[in-house]
Length: 70
Image (tube, rainbow, N blue to C red; front, top):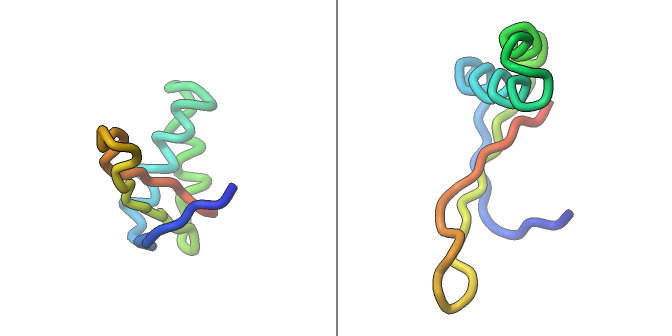
């Protein structure tokens, strides 16, 4: 996948843990979210935010997204 645009990176552990826990809840289930969030939300992991730009004449899809890189 290729994504163009500016991205923000953070190593803030609270932010990283928040996103790893959210991701774990989605893929591993709510009952194991904290376990996997703590295991994957460690120093050295990053949260990457890329701001969406309007696409198309309607300007749909404006907003932002976040992802965790471990």
